[in-house]
Amino acid sequence: MKKQFVILAMCAIVLLTSACVAAQKGMGNTSGVARGVLSPIITLSGTIVEIHVGPCVDATMGNDPIGIHLFVQTSGGTEVNLHLGPARVIDRIVAPMSPGQTISFDAFSTPDLAPNAYIAKTLFWQNEVIKLRDDALRPFWAK
Image 1 (cartoon, one colour):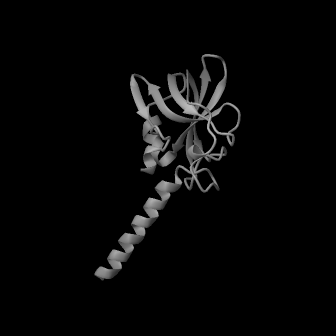
Image 2: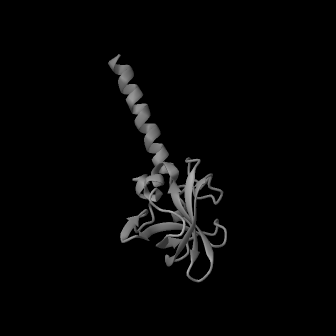
Image 3: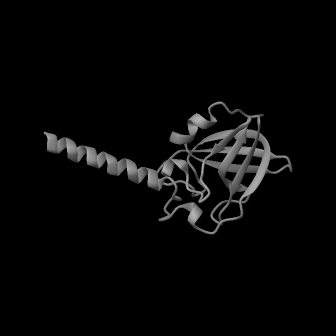
């Protein structure tokens, strides 16, 4: 009985660890999106137009089927699609946010993303600094 419990516990650890590592990988990619060709980190600000929870079609997610994106109308008039991360992790972060609120963010892009699509590194919202990725652009949920 004890041996079965140990084996079950080890399987659970392996499964949980592999899900976290895969979370930073693009769909079908063998390495994280931040390990490829990146644009420089930019800072933008604007108004939240929509908080979208659903499948990520921009090839920024690993094994998590559902991601969270903010659609933000920038002060320059461009609407951007800001990928935040997997819903299972990010939902608590965006819960107090709503369309019409202002937000600033540091973000980057990759050649795989659509025009005006970015991946958030840091959010600046209502006097809060929300770090989603470290300086190596590794998401906090992948640690």
